[in-house]
Length: 384
Image (cartoon, rainbow, N blue to C red):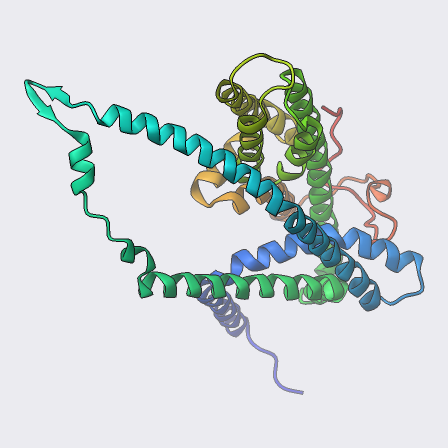
């Protein structure tokens, strides 16, 4: 057996490992976003895989394959359905837009045909527009086409990485989890497992809070759109609930689709022009988003994770401004997870027990290992 390392050598080895991990994270920074998306998708599908794996005789590999293929088939089916329905709808929308464009262009030509007098000088806008150089060949330059092809192929590559990574995370997460816990010293592996269960509980509460928020937003959107006579109010309410997970972008997509329908169809019973009705529909979505982001989301997420609503609001806005939508989506459970880890480290530094003697077996699903005690992330006293 080789000689044991001295304490100095161990510290040097630890420092080298940390430097290597940081260097790897810097060089592979482009992989962070796709792998984060893969982890989120695997986290969402894992309860289904775990349920069927524990209630059937099939191995986890086969259950993962079946659930994953079913999820992909559902996505493909939705895409095919939209592809079949889209041409007719797009044709109708295109005709309406062309009609609106013709009217607007006619009014613009009428306006530009009259000279504009500024300080006694006449300006003829139509002459300026006629002399404005427009080179249509600039729209089909080879460098633009090449850049579009390059970006498209890059996006397809990242999509492939997400699909494959999600599958392997689903299939091998139990073994990966045990391997990560096993990296620690034997005396601390029970603590690491307990910290993992606490972090998992944080993310479960976050998911429950997000579901409650989405259902509430869907109901509120349906109610308000129905009140103003919006065609397909229930459909847009369901879409608002689904796309609410994608902060900022999701509501904008649904609001844009609703605005197009409002501009074409108008209200079912309010006598007003389609343009004014479209502005009202956009105002309804803006109002719902304002209420959600300022009041509902901080309160519901704060209640679910036992955080102050102000902390939730500031963290989401800060993450959205500094790091984008993905960071804003996961910043709240990340803060909760950080609180769990910080509580454990603080307890060890102060040499006090990190967990009170409270059982949490009823808080965790029966198909996962149950820790013996519970931590600082307690159940909230009330639901909101």
